[in-house]
Image (cartoon, rainbow, N blue to C red; front, side):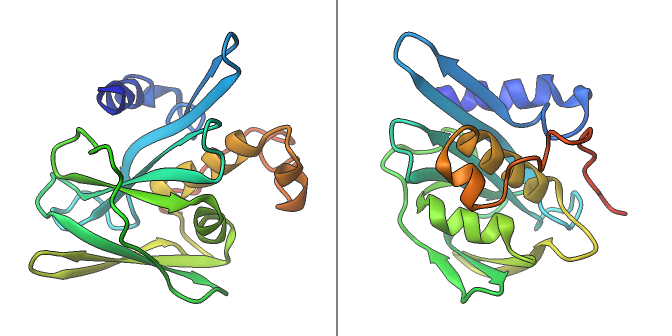
Length: 188
């Protein structure tokens, strides 16, 4: 239910530009719970039917874990596993499906450690391999020259999740988005 609202919020605010519009941050002052999320966005392949999509939902109630939302544009394939190849790290495989389904058609939810997402978001380049029931799909998440909407949103999510914590300093996130207006380099 909450993920469905996330998709609607992401679509409704996408006209603001940048990743601030895509990444939704909610803080409950009464319970001191912070939630940062973005709905599945396409990787560096445009809007073709086989293009993988990636979304993430993180909460301060489980700060070391996140829910990865993976599908294909148009929800054409059922995803069984995902592998990130983020330079300079070894391949990072994700197969643990989340206990709560994504609630979005054609999108599979996986549980993933935050350190896996850190390596993917903050590496020098990354590509993704999706295993479906009948195929393997490989696409760039970002390279040194181009970045997908999903990659930019993942970096923004890391920044928002770690803002004001020791991780913000240790990962070098201080000033990444605050020094100047953020401008994603979509298809440059």
